Length: 197
Image (cartoon, rainbow, N blue to C red; front, side, top):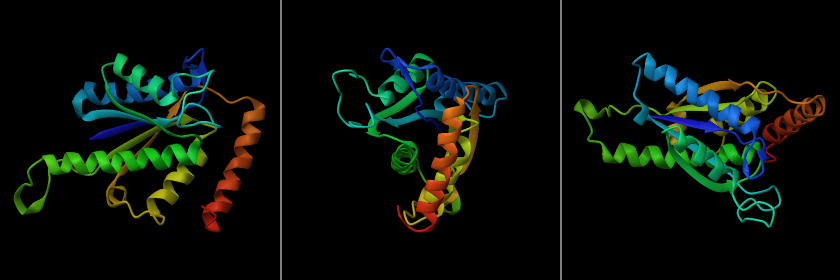
């Protein structure tokens, strides 16, 4: 099973903005390429979205934002004929990934439980394939978070064997966003190394 995780970036008039759409499109293109190569079929893909409504109110709608980014991503994915699990659970890179990986582990457990075990106890479903999309500037921090979540204290069994793919979306940061992203990377690194998370 392939789990497609586009990290939220922006919105525009309560519809996912160009950056968020670019991340979804990158994953959709990746999935279609695999289907065209007969590696797998479309029913093997599910979009996972966990971005909430706003930073201040990730779990509840506000007067300005009645739809969560997860909901918008889910609608986009379904409009392209993909299955989607979209729940407004978090805000920010670490929190989004933490919740998304938790959903993936739960979903994968349900799938494994619903398929009969084959000879020698080997299930034909295999480990989860987790495909995460963001832009080039954000990618180092995303990889950092995935590394620490995968090898950290959570001990999610399915993550130990998961195959991670990082898909670069075509949208860019402003110079200010590049500077902010560099600072955030080192803040995250500090938190992970010194157990501040």
